[in-house]
Length: 507
Image (cartoon, one colour):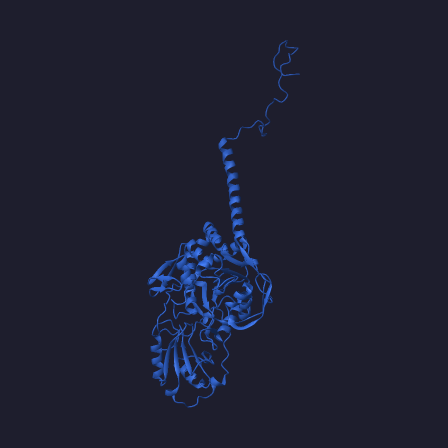
C-alpha cells in the first residue's frame, strides 16, 4: 500500500506512515547525517596533495642522487679477513682519494698527457671514525711516499698488474685502479679499509661553491703561477678555482714540497669542518640534499657505499662530532735514501702510528713503550774524535724561516764548527740522521738537544750527520717532547684549530 492509499475506516485519503519512519533510538547514529563542511573537504584534499608531493619530491631526489653515483670495486684482489661493517654503528675507515685526471670536465687543467683515466691519487687521506663517533682521525699519505704496491687486478679492464717495490704511492691507482690504492694502504698499515671515495678537481670547485666558500689563512701574500693561487696576507674566503688552487699548490707553501701542501689541505678541511658545524649544515635536510647532489655527481665510491641511504647514514654520524676530536695526522716520513726528492717511512714512528690505529681510533689510549735501541752503533762507548772536523748539517723542517741559524749556533757552540744549513720539508718531530762511520757523532749531536736513542737513525744517503729540526723545535733550546696522547706526537692539528699557512721562503 502506498503512503497515499485511502483509509477505509476514515473514508479519506490521509497519508499512511512510511514503514521506515519512526522515532530515533537514543544513542544510535542519524543515518541521514549532515553534509560535511566544504572547508573540511578542501583540507583533506590538500593533505593528500601535500603527501603525494612529499612522496614525489623524496622519490625524485632519491632517484636523482642514486643516478648520480658512480661505483667501483673496493679492492683489487687483496685478501680480506674482516666481514662487512655496519655503517651505522661500527668503526669505519674510508679512504679518500683526489684524482688529478685531466679527462672529461678536468681537461681545462691540462691534457690527457698530464694524467688520464683514473689519474694519480695526489690526495690520499684515510678517514677513521670510531664506533661511538667520539674520535675521528684523518691520516694523510704524501704522494711522494715510496711504498711496495701489491699485485693488483683492475676490475674494470681485468688487466693484471705485478707487484712493485719502492714506487710512489700515488701510482697504485694510476696503474691498476682505485681498488689497488685501497690494497696498497691495507698492506702498508695493516688495516682493512671499509669504503673509499674518489673525487676529481671539479668536485672541490663545486663543493666549495655549494657551501659558500671556505676561510683560509696565509702568513704572507701568495702569487703562485703554477696553481693560479693568489691570496693577500691573512684570512680569505676561497671557492671555485681559488679553492682548488689552494689545495693543489706545491710551490706556495713551506719548502714547496708535498708535505707543505698536505698542511694546506688539512687546514682547508679543518676550516670546512668548522663551517659545516657552526652553520648546522649536516642537520639541515635542504643543505644536505644540495651538498649530496654536488658530491654524488663528482664522486666515485665503492659498491658498499653506492646507495643514498648509506650516504645519509654516514652524514648522520658525522653531524654531531666535536671538531676538537677530529685529528689531522701526516704519516711520519723522512727523505728517501734512494732519492732525496722522495719520502720514506720514518721508523719507528710510522710503525708505532699504524699499531696505535689498529688498536683503536682513540689515540689517547696508552701505547706500548718503545723498546730501547739495541743498535751497537748507538750504544757503544764513543771513541775520541775531533769535533771541529765532523761534517754536520742542520735541515730546517720547522716551518720557521731562519730557524736553522739559531739551532746551528747551539751546535757550533758545542764545538762542531764544520756546519752547513739547508731548508727542508716540514716534519713533525726532530731527528738525527747519520751515514756510515758517524754513529758516535750522531749520538753526541742528539745529546745536545736531549733527543732519545729512538730519534737517531742511520740513513745511507746522509754524509756525516744531519740534525733534522722539526716543528717540535720552533723555539727554545730543545725540541718539545712529543704529546703522549697523540701516539708519538703525530697529530698536526684538530679541526678546532685555526691555523695560518707558512708560505714558501728561505731558511
